[in-house]
Image (cartoon, rainbow, N blue to C red):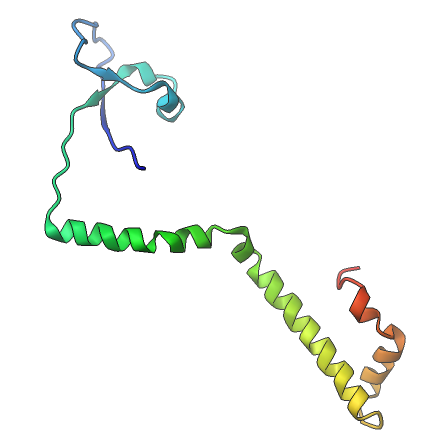
Length: 127
């Protein structure tokens, strides 16, 4: 739910007279308005929508899930996860290459495989 309202500020030399029909800023919003929140008062407003506005609003509502998803911590870490998966893929491909062709020219890969001896399966990359 979205609360929409319009507010105006009393002038600095304003003296309170009859404010029976004027709403003050709600207490929960006082922080948003700052130190002088008591100088604000709410204005009556009306919303009028035409067909184009209604269609636009419906399209925006449909896209709201994209923003929710984009704010997810999973997607903020996606670059890191993508790099980790790519590194693991390369390690597995190197391991399989040496396993399939032990006499290959990839001596440094074989040396790496000897030194790690399956360590790549159990040790975190940044360890």
